[in-house]
Image (cartoon, rainbow, N blue to C red):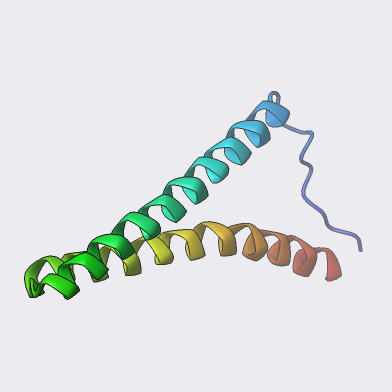
Length: 88
């Protein structure tokens, strides 16, 4: 039995794929920029002896890295689920 999702069953699915791809690109670019800005903030605050601002910079780096990881892993996870469903 070959079970596979019918991606052509919905009208406008091609447009939806383009929008999702564009959103993923924007999310990844913003996440990388936020990692850079937060890392600079963290470094400057640490060197000037401001622990409160350094903590906010560290949290910004971790949140931006987590967002980029989730955005990137989401595509791989969905592809894995599709290939897993095609096996059974």
